[in-house]
Length: 70
Image 1 (cartoon, one colour):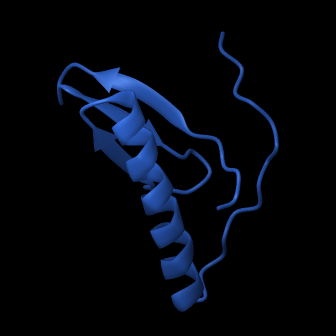
Image 2 (cartoon, helix red, strand yellow):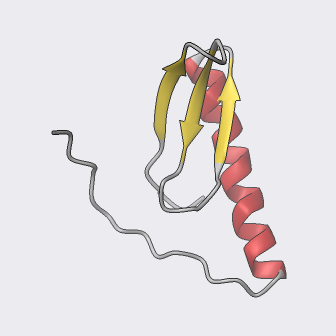
C-alpha cells in the first residue's frame, strides 16, 4: 500500500472512530476501535486505488508532508 496520510478521530455523532485519507477524495472508513478504523481504511485505500485504475481515473501523488495544526 502506498503511504498516504491517515487521519483518525473519534466521532461523538457516530460513536465510532473515523479514518480519512485527505489525498484520496471520499476515502473514509470507521471502526469501534482505533485499530479497527486503521485496518478498515487500509482496505479502503486499496479498493480506492484499484477502482481508480479500472476507470482510468487519476491517482493523486503522495504529498510526503504532514498536516500542520493551528
